[in-house]
Structure formats: structure tokens, C-alpha cells
Image (cartoon, rainbow over all chains, first blue to last red):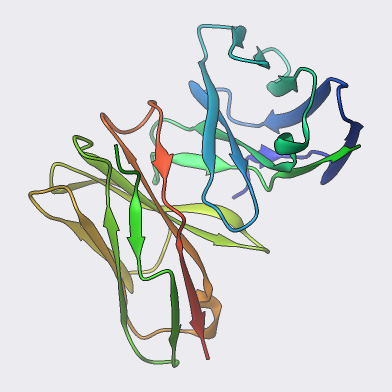
Length: 114
Length: 113
């Protein structure tokens, strides 16, 4: 079943502002998390990943925060640009079980207002 | 460096038919994973192949199968197509597989009529 999700389906921010996209996961055994960006008509594009032994990881204009206590993952995008408009997916790797693979959330549509 | 290539980009099939989709990973990548994306269910993992062996499998019926060749290219087959199989099928390649960065292709849009 769906173990990653519960998020705002659409998030609208002003160009230049920071945006935060949230994601909740339910499996405390998950040990790897990824954020993907998907633009219309394209496949998902890797943004950043984080392992469960970390609580923060930074990339270029993006930061992922992992709070294992409340099983929450967030993606922060600094100084948003028009090109950041896309659907953002979080995914977790649930070790073991019948399908040892990535489980994706339904996604959050980020809209950048000019 | 060429990205992940999926062919065909678009496909229309009739219920009951079978279909084969192809994925060419990034050169040097040995892991290929397949996903189904639909508006209702989102992205769902189908299976992963690594060095010609299926390493992981999602919760899909046996009508969905795949294989990987010695050059890491992978094919996915769906037999006895159903209307609900209409979806975007995505392939992702990575160097080592799970828990490492994966690169997606643009997908094959399958419509079953």
C-alpha cells in the first residue's frame, strides 16, 4: 500500500521565494530517501537523496531534511526560479518485504508565480 | 554521454494483445528498473534487473515480465493487455542499483483500447 505521501497536491510560490515540499513516510525501517522532479512530458529527474544515518543534506539550491522521529522528509528549494515548476516526488526504499524497491508518494505540483 | 533511451515513445494496443517495451540504459550502468505511472496510482515499481538477473520485483501480476541482456539493455513485456494497463512506463538506470542515483528515460506511453 501507499506508505509515502500526505502532502499538499499543489504548492504555489512567488519567484525568488524559498519553497518547502513535505512528505511523510510510514515505514520506520526505510533507510534511503530520494526526491525527484518531473516536468511535463519528461521522466523523473533525480534531485537529491539522503540516507537514514543523516538528517540533512544540501545540494545546489536544494536541501533535504529527514526527521526520523516523526517520519518526515522535506525538500527546500531556495530562490525558486520558473524552471523549478514541476511535480516533485519523494520516494523511500523499504528494505525487505515483498518488493524491495522504491515507494513513491503521489507528488506535489510546485507552481512558480512570476 | 547519452541518457536513458526508451522505445517506442507512444504505443496503442488492443485489449488481449501483448506488448514489448525497450530500454537502453546509460553506458556503463548495470541496473535497470521499470516503473508504471498512472494518474490514480502514481509511480509504482515493477522490477529491477542487475547484470541480467531480476533482483527485485514489485506487486504486479505475472502478465508483467522483463529481461535484461548482456549489454544491459532491458525489455519489458505485458501479455493479455487490459484497459487498466494504460500508463506511462518508465525505465531508470543506475550504476549499482538501489540506493544510488537513478536516471530515468522519457517513458513509453501505452494506451490500451
